[in-house]
Image (tube, rainbow, N blue to C red; front, side, top):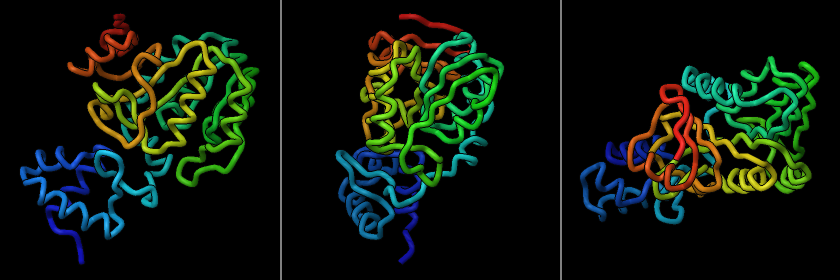
Length: 259
């Protein structure tokens, strides 16, 4: 049986936010908790949603957008973020780059830098920076994910854990004033923590479309990030949470905001 209009509205909200509680769905759609639970249970039974702690998300069996498609989404915002990050990196410095589309724009913005020492789990990002201006590029091993050519798992973690670098450039699926930074998959959160633990400074890059959203897996707290770079200033209460987390904020309009 095809989903009802209410079920389609539920799916739309979950796709947009990455994760939703039943209470939030009930409030957004202005229906009772009982109605939401009944519709969610039906969608879970059909395999269209997956129950996770505290709410529902899209099942991992539903593929995420391709890396090429994500590169095309929000291009201007991602280029602004990339320019702000690249301006802080000096020739000869070392950095981890994770495998997001926004990080790929950072790699492109670093194309004129020289003698960089790069460690990444992204085949696409490695390809952008390898054989340029004396760069040294190290690619984490393991099976590459189909939709973004990113390597995760024990082999990748063991590999990146061998390095101690100047910067970790990280991305997230969502940022929430109470939950911090969040991602869609546990392997991404574990990988991010490893990069944070093996870098002098961690920089989170995230465009405004991820503000005040939720995702299934906690990635890290604001206090674990030295700098948050975005294309737009967040509003309270997210802005206040960033300040309380002792995390610097860098945006095009304000350039820098320090706690």
